[in-house]
View 1 (cartoon, rainbow, N blue to C red):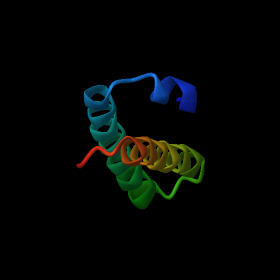
View 2: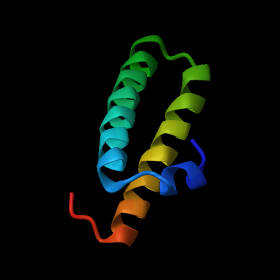
View 3: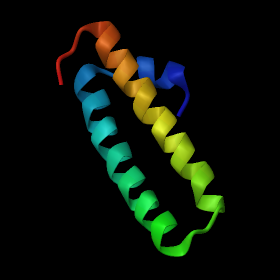
Length: 65
């Protein structure tokens, strides 16, 4: 997801998106650990980056988690 799209979301929507992305990331980590497939590592990296972007936006807005 693009940073502009994330910035346009409300605080509550960002928190919901953060929960969804973290869930997806945990699923991807389990898949990588069980299969060791390297193509999934790219998706995990993108998910980690999205989590970091969401947390940065929330901290800039002064939202407590």
